[in-house]
Amino acid sequence: FYEMAIPAIRSVDPDTPIMVDAGWYANAGAFSGWPNALNDDKVLYAFHMYEPYNFTAGKNFRDKLGYVYPGTVPFGTGEVTWNASTINAFLQPVYDWADKQAIPANRIVAAEFGCMRRNEGCADYLTDVMANLNAHDIHWAFYSFREDEYDGFDYELGSGALGWKYWEAVEKGQTPVMPYKPNALWDAIQAGLPE
Image 1 (cartoon, rainbow, N blue to C red):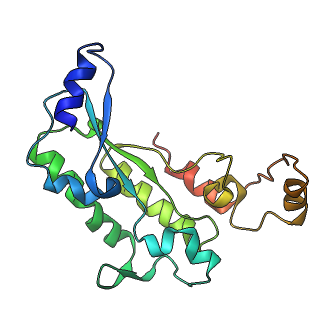
Image 2: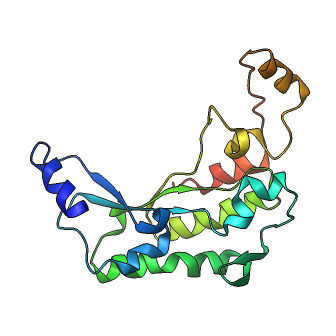
């Protein structure tokens, strides 16, 4: 598909970078199944990082599943202890593939990563993911900054509940002011910003 779409785009725009995702919902390991890079030196190769999903997802908090980071989480057909080393190993296939294809780091993008802000260990997870991405000098974007529909990944809110006044205003059809405040999650994001 990309080999058909990119020439069509280039016929009207030869310069704008084009970002393409790996397969399997932009899974980081999916690039290892690509036999070669695309024939365009302005393509950016993107992936998402929400693994282990049983920890990062909102369901972990809502359903009180109790998965924490670092910690042991169901993954694949078993259970895996997730920590900085596991994250590094999980993301390594992206870097190996890029090296094999001679794709420079500035064309690799972690287009989304994050965890539900109320999951225990979210700040540590964000810190470890950003450390990996920064160590490989690639572009990245956390999900999400001031999401307007779902507060679960809005790290400026911290890890606490929004409170009844917030939800009362929502029920009345009002747009309440978000209770942004200094907190460990936002501190982790700011600390992970490359200099």
